[in-house]
Amino acid sequence: MQVQENISLRPYNTFGIDAKAKLFSSFRNISELREYIDRCAGQNKLILGGGSNVLFTKDFDGIVLKNEIKGIEKVKEDDQHVYVKAGAGENWHQFVLYCIENNLAGIENLSLIPGNVGASPMQNIGAYGVEIKELFYELKAFHLHERTNYTFSLKDCEFGYRDSVFKRRYKDQFVIVNVTYRLNKIPTFNTSYGAIEQELEKMDVKELSIRTISQAVINIRSSKLPDPFQIGNAGSFFKNPSVGKEKFEQLRSEFPSIVGYENPDHTVKLAAGWLIEQCGWKGYRNGDAGVHAKQALVLVNYGSAKGNEIYTLSESIINSVREKFDVLLDREVNIL
Image (cartoon, rainbow, N blue to C red; front, side, top):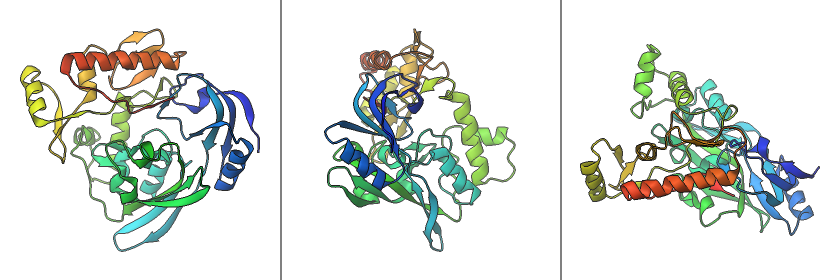
């Protein structure tokens, strides 16, 4: 087990921020994680997955431990479902492709989301009308202080919009080890959200399948979102804010083209990208920190931007949206 010193974290975060870790290593199982915790007692610790939802604004004075727990297996099945367990260190998109190859439905709308499996329940990731909570069965997590494994059910995770108990009450207390998903043997296609139907028409799809839906989502995401291997980014930087119906009607009277979707609790979810674009930020660039030219929801590092430059840009965006619409944006990306 090797612990490296003064390591650049640039290869380990999709923003490509060149922050440094005082100490760095990776673990492939809980036994290795235990050893590192014992060896580095007293050090600040950061568990890092795919680095796709983090913005480093400074060097990390402690040990960064990269979760590389792998493995995918079918653990049980019934008449309607197959339950598949995946290690937290597995690449998310590769896991989606595994499910599609094995004709397991329900996850296809979540194709090409960056990051690893372990982040999926932590963030309750979602796209094109599907959220992880709809597929989630259970997860195993290791408590860093008690040194004990816990199993979390759907109810235990307290999923919300891009939220879970791991981002609130249990923040920095657990390491997710693996996640088990309940996937469908018989698909129920979800094509009504976003531009999926139009993309399927463009693809001239004659027979709908989980594979064609996945490809449509990949095409849409590729056309709108920058590849982090080409331009540093963490996908959607802000959450879509929700407002009451009265507030939405007030906004719609002033801005007739405003985009909104009714939530189950009868509040209205606004499109953060639309709000940001109306404030003139789309395509903005200051040095190497900017807003993507095709999707205003995505902040980008064009090369050598510092994390605090990206953060300062996000502050300016939040302030301008609040001034124009009286709506407060919340960051989806974790700031360190």
